[in-house]
Length: 252
Image (spheres, rainbow, N blue to C red):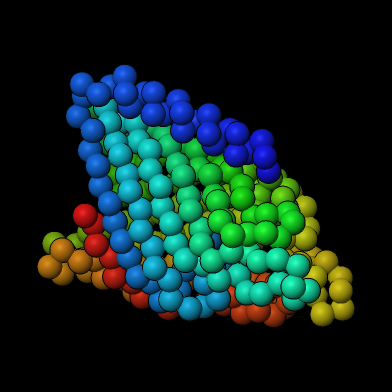
């Protein structure tokens, strides 16, 4: 994974240089913090079905460039043979460009994301990178994400997703999401109880969420799930089962 960290450093250096070159232009800085009942990423619990605290910082500057970082507590359980730790935190670093296509309602968002897990001493570590491209039209967004070597060096990975968001009655919002996860090879979900590799190289995740803004706080409840059977999800771990997720967040 060393080459990925070098690439991340190079991207960060280039972005800082770009920000410095545009110092005469306005730079918008924002931050956010959240508490969720379960950290679900692409339908799978990253916090062992427990609560997680999250937060991030973003900087955006003309003409549509952005850079940011986001972190969350995670819990991937214990290493059964005691050979290391999976870590207790995820930190994401990302950068990209977003903007409208001409004077239309269409928009585009392209970027790079690096996922880091400090304290992960298991070989191979979980750190990995992705590139993404999204297109939007009014309240609809569709996108594709690609990783040349997904979490824990599990091989190439593609993610295709669609999202629809709608604001109504001023302070309420509705969100619909569906995503298709495609792994290049078997093995991401580990072995079954017989020691055989779980025969699953793709799955679909989905969610329906309802949000409400109250005195500057964003409250949300979502139904999140996948089409994976429990037996196909890390040997019956139930981390992929459908569940309700509650969250409270604040933009700063």
